[in-house]
Image 1 (cartoon, rainbow, N blue to C red):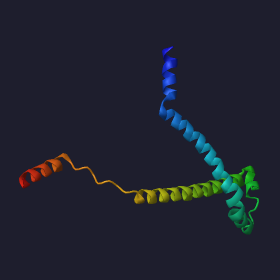
Image 2: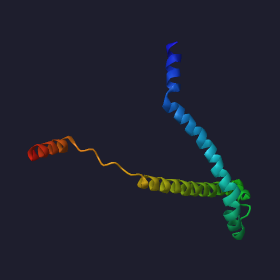
Image 3: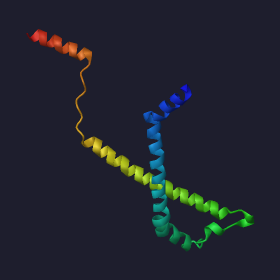
Image 4: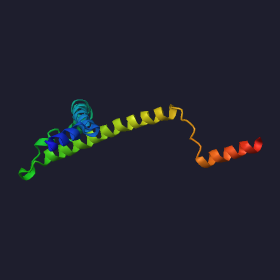
Length: 126
C-alpha cells in the first residue's frame, strides 16, 4: 500500500502535472506549426522553387531502389519547420524583452554594510 501512496504523491506533484500539460500543449503546437508549413509555406514557397528546378516529384525519386527523394523531402520539411519555429520564438522573445524593459524596476535593497553606514552617518549628523 505504501508504494501506491508514494506513486500518487509523485503524480500529484506540480512538476509532473506541469510536464504533462507541456507535452499536451507541445503536441497541439506541433500540429499548428506542421499545418502552417505544409498548408501555407510549402505551397507558396517550396512548390514553385521545386517546379522551377524540375523536381516537383522529389519524393518519388529512388535511384537504385533507395527512397532518397523521400529522405531529401523530409530534410527540407525539417529545415522549413525549424526556421518557422525559430521565427516564432524570436518574435516571442523580442516581445518579452520589450515587456520587461517597459516594466519599472525597484531599486535594489541596500546591503547590511550600507545600512550600518547610513545609521552611522545619521548619528554623526545629530
